[in-house]
Length: 180
Image 1: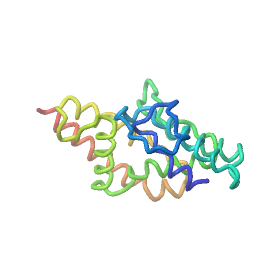
Image 2: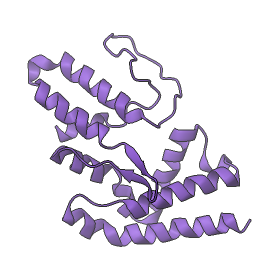
Image 3: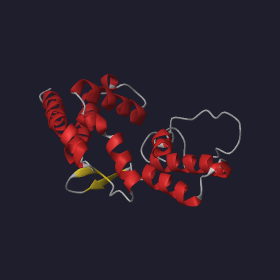
């Protein structure tokens, strides 16, 4: 189930909840942005798994995958900013840690992933954004990195040191823009 959840967790970019994925026609997604894509991704996973139901995807397995995908969505705490949802199952914990593992990678990889997210959310390259847009995104990213709590001790042991370094690197980028 982890492989299915991981494969589908970001497929909802460009689609809206309610789009029909049951036909055999190839669909061209519009750029509808990335916020809320988790619900669309869960819907797509459900539809595909239901279609393949004869091969062992009962309702419990479908719900497990659906919840894990939905649990990768962010929530906003009025004091902390962006935080991950409370995971509803073990698969959610695995997928959440994998989804944000780039925060614990070396900075070069963390930053490349962050730039991809910016493009997915905004439809343009980070370097094309004005300084105000860049600053907002960097502040959001910084808060998310700082707020990331690892669901498994071994992930915390593996990623925490780089997570702290990456937060400092993002903070440096914020300070450079603020000085402009």
